[in-house]
Image: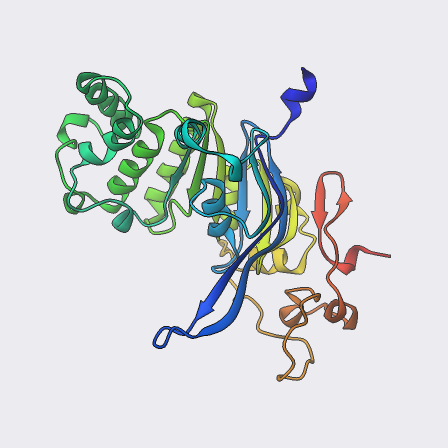
Length: 329
């Protein structure tokens, strides 16, 4: 019984995701893009796990794989011990109820032709939940829970009649209406003003406590991750650079990429710094070797060893992992 309680809710097991790149005009193949390259991590029940990295690092791909919008090229994604690739029929429908996603852009994630009520009630209709009266009452409860009060003043508005913050609250209400166990929040506040960001982050914390939620929080902003998350996983070019409890990663960053991300966060007494350009003395015509550290061309501490092979993700201090040769003897 104790073993079952300790079993992670989510496991990524050596997940690889490859996309085929094509030329847009003639549709000729231009090779492959490895969005994820052997990604492994676990999310415990009830925690907020932040996946942090620049645009193009593979964060959103992880989220899409977790909600089963896409399938991995190799490796496994497990939810409560079940491989998502095996889900069919009733088990897939039940999975859709238990796992929901909040998308980054509230301007694109809401159908402009649907009212707020039609948008939020749709998951209940798909899941054949309750009568029309039950669904209407549930929509009212969901809207008021995310701060759209009184709910009936918002139910029959269209997205263009709402502010950006109100639209994202509608998107959160839609994700929460089925009372999921796991929510993937993909940059949920990145397109909003700072004051609205703080409100929505606090609301996510309240929803997490009230509903015993587990969250995968995807962001490029380490400040938001520090405020919200229990653990942070730093990802770059589809590979994990560092992982550990939030306080350890922020206060004692181990990987040069994490340090660069932290310097890019502005503070009261320091302007943000740009992430480093390629810094290694490598001939410009040499493409990075597949086995090399993906960050070596931008790393001020890189050596010839980094160009030849990638450091494995290793535990440097308790529960704190890094993939960097700086921490090897």
